[in-house]
Amino acid sequence: MPEMGKLLVVVGVALVLIGLAMWMGVGRGWLGRMPGDIHYSRENFSFHFPIVTCLLFSVILTLVMWLLRKF
Image 1 (tube, rainbow, N blue to C red):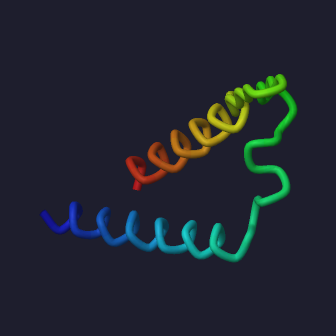
Image 2: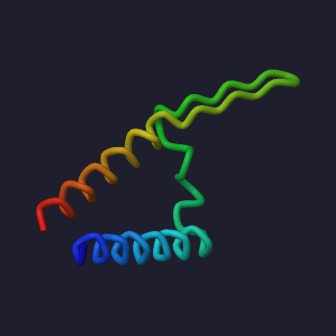
């Protein structure tokens, strides 16, 4: 059970750091506007799907989880 406690603390600290970074505006210029993100708009309709941003976050989270599992 001590490993679960350590994991929860690490995940909590990581969420706090990510929240602070987003609150301060880090990533505001590129987050959701990467090359490959789909954006389609017409007169009264707009569709936005940040597929490349989602893939990037998926890779980063996979690497973090892999590293946490190794240690």
